[in-house]
View (cartoon, helix red, strand yellow):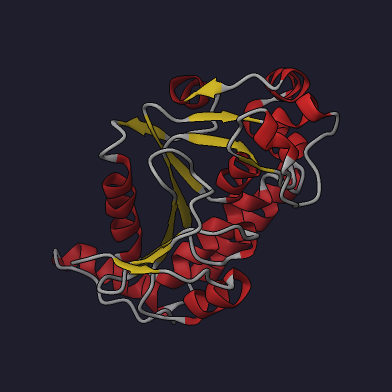
Length: 245
C-alpha cells in the first residue's frame, strides 16, 4: 500500500476516461497539498487498491464512478468549484472554502488562471459553476453571501451548510477519504453507478421526475445478477461476489 508520485501533469480528461474504464477502480479520491486543495501541480495516483488518488483541474462531475474530495487548506474560486464537482467532500479542520471572484470585479465563470489574484495573495484558480453549485448545495442565502462578499467559509461552517460531509484533523482527511473510497469500492460497481445517477438526478429534475427515475432504476436492479448475488450473500452470511451484470 503506497502512493506513487508523478512529476508531470496528467491530462485529466484522458486520465478520467482511463479510470472510468478500469474495472479494478471502484472510486476516485481527489486531493491537494496541505496548503491548498488545487494548486501544487503534482499528480498522485494510488495503484495497489481499487481506487485512485489524483490532483488536477477537471470536470469531475461527468465521471460515472464516485469521486471523493479530500480538502486541506484553501479551496477558493476554482478550487472550491472543483471540490463541488465531486460527489462527496471530506475536509481537514483548517480548510477554507470560498468564491473571491467578486474581489477582482468578476463572478465565478469559465475556467482560467488569474495572475491578478497573486496580488491579493490568494491561492485561487478561477473555475466554473460557483453560483449554481453553491445554491444547489447550501441554498440561496448562503450562496448569495459567499459570492457577493468573497468571504471564506470554514470547514465547520461548510459542514453545517451541507457543502462538506465530514471534517477531520488535517493529517487524517486523506486517509479517511481513502477508507471511504475503499468501502464504496467493495460494493457492486453497477449498483453504485445507479445510486450516483439517482442522487444526481435530484439536482436536475423536479421531485416528481426524480422519484420516477429512482423507481425505474430500482426496478432495473431486480433484473441484475448483482441484486440476486447481494440478497443471496446476505441470507447466507457471506461476502458477495459482484460481477457488474
